[in-house]
Each structure stands twice: as C-alpha cells, then as structure tokens.
Image (cartoon, rainbow over all chains, first blue to last red; front, side):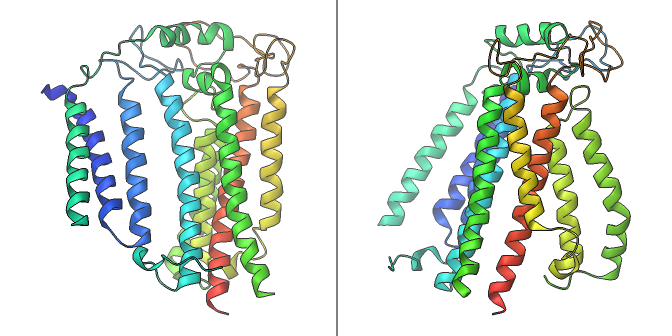
Length: 116
Length: 91
Length: 156
C-alpha cells in the first residue's frame, strides 16, 4: 500500500464508522449521527479526488504566478452534496421529534406497531 | 444468531471498503482532467469571473444548482408542514 | 429553551451578532472574486440567527424574527433564482447573457492573476444574492419552527 494514499483511507474509515453506528446502536439520535458520519466521509472523498500535487486554489484574485490549479468540478459537486445532507438531517430530526411525541420513547426496537 | 449474521456482513463491507481505498490510483494525479483544464483556461474569457468554482456551480453546471435549490426548498416545506399539522391537532 | 442563557452569553451575543451579519453579507456579495458565494454566505448568516435564538430563548425573539416573513422571503428567493435562469433563453437555459456586455454587471476581466474587478461576471452576482437569501431565511425558519413547536407541545 502506498503511504501517499492516506486521505482515501481516512475517508473510507469515516464511512465504516458511520455504518457501524447505524447498524449496532438503538437510540434514534445515534442513528442520525451515523447517517451524518457517512455523508461526511463521502464529501471528504469527493474533495480529495480532485487534488493536483503542488496546486493552488482555482481562483485568480491575488493568485501566485504561473502555478498549477486544483480541479474545480469536485468542489462544486461537494457543495451540492453538503446542502442535500443538511436537508436530509433536518427531515430525519423532525421525524425523531414526531416519533418521541407519539410513542414516548426513542428506542428503535419499541416503535414497531402500526397504529391506525 | 441474528447479531452474528449482521456482524459478519458488516466486517465484509468494511474490509471491502478499506481494500478499495488502498488500491486507488496515486493521490495527487487525476486521470481525466480535460474538462477541468478547459474550465480553468476559459473562465476569465467567457464568464468574466475570477472564481472558477462559482463559475462552474452557477454557469457551466447551473442545472445541478437548480436541482439542489429544489431539494432544499422541498426539505424546508416538509419540516414546516410537519410541525403545522401538530399544532392543528391540539385545536 | 424559553428562558435563554446567562448574562455573559447575552452580552457577547449583542457584540458579535452585527459583525456576523456583515461578514455573511460580504461572503455572499463577493462570490465571484474570492472563495464563497450564495450557499456559504447563507450558512454564515443563518448561524448568526441561530446564535440569537439560542442566547435569548424563544420568548426573547418573539417580536423580532417572524416565521411567516421568513417563509415569504424564502419563496421569493427561489422564484428569483428560477427567473434568472430564463434571462438568456434566446440561446439556452441558464445562458449568461450579461457577461462581457457592458450593461449591469458586464465589465471584462484582465487575463491571469489580478486584483479583482467587482463589475464583472454577468448574472453570477444576482444568482448569488437569490440563493443566499433562500438559504439564510430557509434555515432560520426551520430552526425557529423546530424550537417553538417542540417546546409548546411539551408544556401542554
């Protein structure tokens, strides 16, 4: 394994921790934290895909002379992904509040009944 | 029994992800950069902006930003509608 | 959450709130020159609103941040962004008609590293304003509704 590949390994580790959290925990708030961890790992992976060695930010205002620039497209896609993650987390937390008001508990194994 | 199956499946997925991360191409050399080289070279000529990321988000790929604005709008309307229904239950 | 936090937090909030608003509007406005833009600046201003809500409680901001006004402003922001896409419909959807043209934001930029020209980039600053308004009022409305709605149900 190449030691320079460490950013990709860190992003994969974040995704693995997030999957562990929402497979093995019972509280609803911990499930939401697990989903948020998976989204963070994916965003980090997207940003590290577009790096060029020795590159600067893709902005021309006060830029140093004649250097290579980092790719701008993965940064634009990561922006979209962060906003969608925010929207998903807001809806998940609203549903958690709703479930707690209806059942009185936040344990995932106790909210199994379909009441009409 | 069920917990053992879930544990084995999780270990399998985790090992696959880590193996895929260690055998990626070297960090710092993107393979397909032709479109981004065109964007970097032509931002100041066509879009007349200094910021290449904003030009990609709002001009070259503006349709994706429209989709993202729609998702944000739908999420805000969903949260507001959910809490409005609860207030009408009390009345 | 109806009461807010202690005197120290409230004093520091009064000092920091105006600076946060100015910084957020600066990040939105200069999106075509420096890192930033609509989404980032909208998040900064929304976090200033959330700081106000946490420090003073739901009862302390009752007269200042109205939920229905925030909802209306968010809809205006979304419609303005969609209408700006139709400006250059003669060539394509989302075509940048005002760039390099000499009218509202139509200056041209010298090639290579430079010091930044504000009067440039066509429809980009206008789109930055529309998206920034949408993001900041949307997130502020969501935070207010979740706080006020959750607390009111528990006390009744």
